Length: 488
Image 1 (cartoon, rainbow, N blue to C red):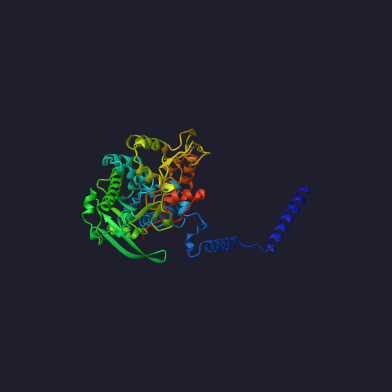
Image 2: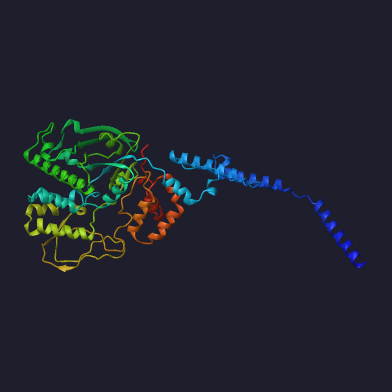
């Protein structure tokens, strides 16, 4: 009897709860799902204006069949491959959830990128070679009647190895053509030291290119002298002189020496970069323009690109210009080799008085000779990254001369990020270049490289870009136009 009463009470309680639940107005699950879906759609549209809603990864109401998943996977894979071939970033619905990072990287890396014809325009002074026209050391060598081979040995010691590293990496992915693009005003507008005159020099008419172009919203006259790579002797250029004003013998000799130094630097550049033929030399006395220079050498076409490496701050933020830190300090080993070379070929006690006055009268930034006065005290490096030259305070008689060859400090970082040449944003120049750059810089290289591989791998491969600009952005030292010139 008691058991029956308990069963009846339990049934009554359950029925009461059932009636209570039925009286409440609960929202059906299908309505909840539709509301959730609409909320996701609205959030996607708000954060991605202009993109269709089919990019949202919908929550399936039922588990799809295996055949459906395989067919959809293959469809997405074909679409992804077609987009990668066209160079567009992959936009596949659900691709993020259905592809692993490793699979996507493998597919991208196996896509052969198109090799472009890249014109590498290289400045000479403070870029490929130390100093401004060798800071008058080349003039001193010719003044003391040293041989052409001795002059070439001097320029070999002044070469900037960063040019090799950057262009070697570029040549792995694209076909390169090297040209010199330098400022040599004396070869176009010559200010004579032998008479009060400024002479407009004209050589072979087919070498001259002049045009008025718009630069930074202003019309400017651009003049380029194109010296063929087949020229080997300054006399070949002097024989083509066609200017209105005849040259004096001393003026012709002075211009010939300027041409000899230019051709010697060109020959050393050819040797250091391993070029089969001597590059063409573009000389200007006006503002530099990459597009006009490319047109002068006939480097025009759909698959053609042109970039200029230069240290001139006036070219900063210009399209297709890669800024280079001024090469005005030599590494310690190169500095020692140069001082030993000068001790043999330009001993201080053998310099003529006129040559000493000429070297001492140079601007302070490019002066290589100074006269000591009593005790000379100079500061040692103050710390990591300091660029003060290192010397020991010594007692010397008044009036003694010494060479001033500034060098990089012996800090922890022998090569800093600012010393490394930037690379243009072209397909193939990806994180491998960044890995080597970070490894040479030194600190926390492994952590940074792993972060790049983990976080930026797919983005870098899709964009086909170098990482040098991204590394500068990490440190705050970034110029968004530096290494970002992509020809249209």
